Length: 272
Image (cartoon, rainbow, N blue to C red; front, side, top):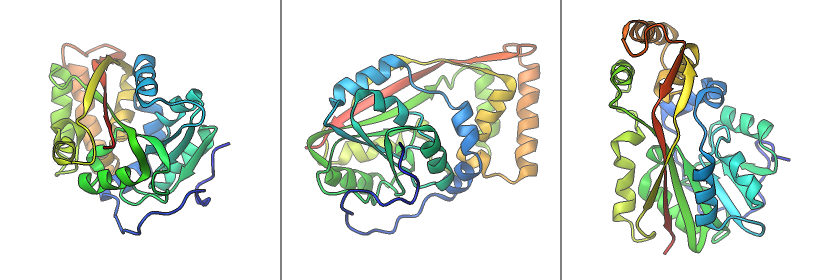
């Protein structure tokens, strides 16, 4: 059974640090954890199989899924037979993960301060989240928790941002971003490019298109941190403008289903 939120982890705490969660993440994800679970894409079997093989997951192996969210990747790791520890700081996401994901230990923490012992894990995964981290601090803490040569996988679903109708929607949505971190600008890579703690990232890409109804697409937008954190009136105004694009753009008008071209990128490195 999943460990209930608030239960003490079975491992030894690391050094104490105080790390705040970004306001947009704390507010947006806490308000819309159910939307996140319902509308965000999962990960294709080939990508998961690659990750499991590359990290050597299996019985007797401990893997830490950092910033696990609602468990969209976490629950795909358990069939490997590995011991899975899910680390998640947002209570509502952690609660949903604990209710829906069997065989996982759930820990309340940020990546920069994990209550896990030195060299206590064989592998770690981070899905859809590294852009939220203090990169150097995160890599330092992951290096502490991982055993020598332990693998780290960073996983991102990446939409085709050049698709014309989606580019119009993105422009409307991103007008509300106001500097909130995003994965698509690649800034999260800087920590890996300068660290001496891990080997360089090796990337493998897998097709992962997502098909959504128009209402589901709006829910997916609401699951975005800074959209979910908007005041209700501003949020509704945004959704009305998005609906107008979907109703008028020649690639989407009159279509009840939307196909979002997308790929899953699995980037793997190892602790030196």
